Image 1 (cartoon, helix red, strand yellow):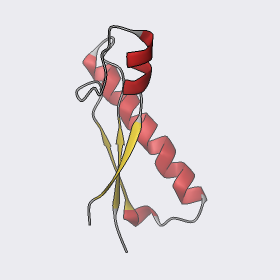
Image 2 (image 1 turned 45 degrees about the vertical axis):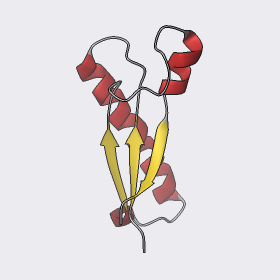
Image 3 (image 1 turned 90 degrees about the vertical axis):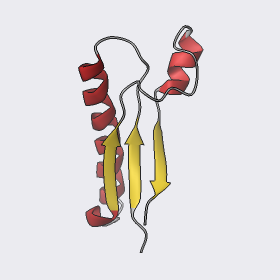
Image 4 (image 1 turned 120 degrees about the vertical axis):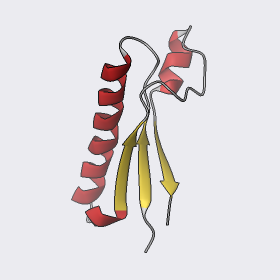
Length: 76
């Protein structure tokens, strides 16, 4: 079986500690949903990145919306 890392991200707005906490909550929410669908929790890892890895500008509403995301990465 594969292990999946669920990576939470936020827009780079506000305090970095709050961004990090929000990104972890975002990833945990997805993990909880997958567990409710019978995915074993030991196969799911979570990590929060806050606003440290943007994929778009944080200067526009559209860019900030793109930066608020969750990514899935196969780690094993």
